Each structure stands twice: as C-alpha cells, then as structure tokens.
Image (cartoon, rainbow, N blue to C red):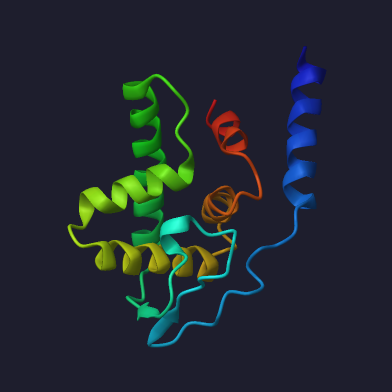
Length: 145
C-alpha cells in the first residue's frame, strides 16, 4: 500500500512537471497590467480588452488571497454537494469582495501577476497552474490530505 501511495504521488509530480508553462505570454510588471483577451488559459471573465492598474501586491497579500480562494472553493463544494472549479471559486470570491466587476477584474489580474512574480513559491505556482487548467485541482487536494 505504501508503494502504491508513493507511485501515485510520483505520477502526479511527473504529470505536473510535464505540462507546458503557460506563463510565457505574461507581460513584465509595469504601472498597468495588460489584459489578455485571447488567452484561453484564463478564466472567461478575465478575457477582456484593455489594461488594469498594477496594485503591486506583496507575496503575503498574494498568498493570503490565494488561500482564501482555496477555502472558498472548499466551502462552496460542501454547501453545494458537488465539485466547484477553481476558476468559478476565484470569480465567486472576487465578486463577494468587490462590488464592481472592474475592481474584481483588476484584482484578479493582480493576483495572477503576484503568482507569476512569486512563481518560485510552490503554492502560488500550483494555484496558477490549476487556474490555467494545466493541472487538475485534485493534485492540490491530494497534497492537503
């Protein structure tokens, strides 16, 4: 049984590492963050024209919100009794925190920018990869167990 668990973990890690990096098209930080309307890896609500202000989120600010998204996803799954996609939970939490759609969009791009800037942090990289659909959220769920 222990070998099965190790093999399962090894396969997941190999799957995780084998996926293409979707961050190559992410522009470097500046005063504004360019929106990416043609990026199919982004949630639909983030596929808009224009740009948003760069809020220059710190690593702790980014991590705190990312953890809130994971917690929100879990609570929504318990409430609904069904799986909730991370993109759906991300948008749902943003809409709870921000009353205006443009503010939610701005913060969404800033969270993505923060995850990109601090990609060396495994938790932020995992969030970004699940958000982009490179890996399934079950990989993160299994790590939590």
